[in-house]
Length: 101
Image (cartoon, rainbow, N blue to C red; front, top):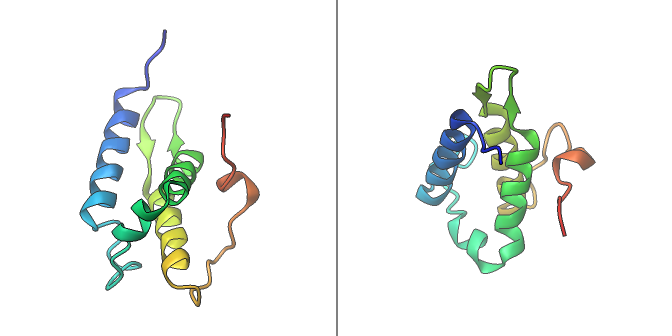
């Protein structure tokens, strides 16, 4: 059985660290303590990881570029915590599509 490449596992680990530490995209989420919102309802945290993994880019050598994925998650969190925030560009269906049962 194949395993996720080391680069992907590392990217997921750092993403989870920044998310839990409250340091995900400090510029966009400045002064917003989003962490309580993520644990109030499981679906909020589920969507965060859905967007991250759907947008995550991995090249043919297995190298990860997750900057855009983290930014899109930060935009989603900002909109969730601040309904007046306008996500630009708007999310496309594939970015927020839940996969699996």
